Length: 97
Image (cartoon, rainbow, N blue to C red; front, side, top):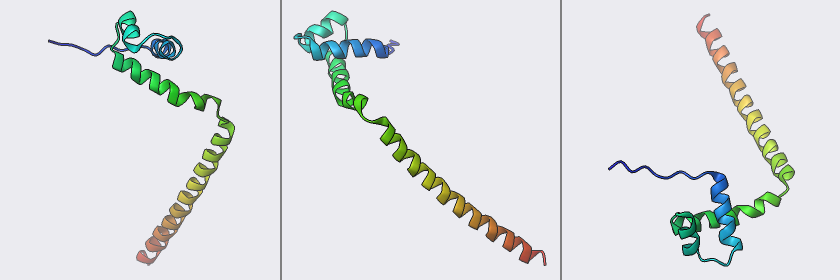
């Protein structure tokens, strides 16, 4: 028995999740209509409702904050690496003498 899992496209998931939110049909009715287990529809609907507010967030602010955080982290790493390189150069110069 080689049963593989069904794979659904993002468009299909979105269509069903949207129908679950908008229509007056129960999850069981939608599941029967599309031959999908009702738990899958429940998960897709929950994900839709959870992620929907992020579509209207100000991505510019989020990006600027992340960019600043990444730059600070990178400068910190560069500083540590520079110190390590200087130490290794100093160590090499003292051992060769």
